[in-house]
Amino acid sequence: MLGQAAGTESSLNDLKSHFGSRYSIPQAILTQQHLNRAKNWLKHWSPGIDEECAEFDLEEEATQYIARGLSNLSVLGKPLPSEEPKFMSWVGTRRPRNEA
Image 1 (cartoon, helix red, strand yellow):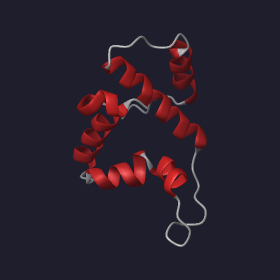
Image 2: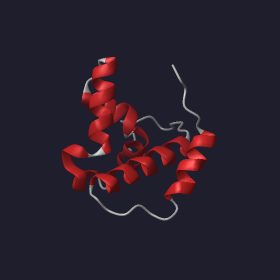
Image 3: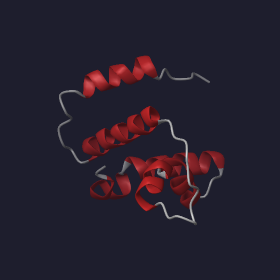
């Protein structure tokens, strides 16, 4: 969401850069097989080419897309939705950070 408008400062570009260098994963693989896998499977599924069934954690996928959209809004200097603090609080309780 809003990644194109945010351009090189988009959250997707940040994630590709960070995780690509940290784990030595080519950016195309990182994007297609990890960051956008669910969206791409749903949008571009082709019988005979793609697997018939795929498993996704829909809550995780939705959380990531909302967080990426909020980040892109911030990059664009746009006001965040009034529900953003509730969402971030929910993320903090449902998806606590692993301190490693």
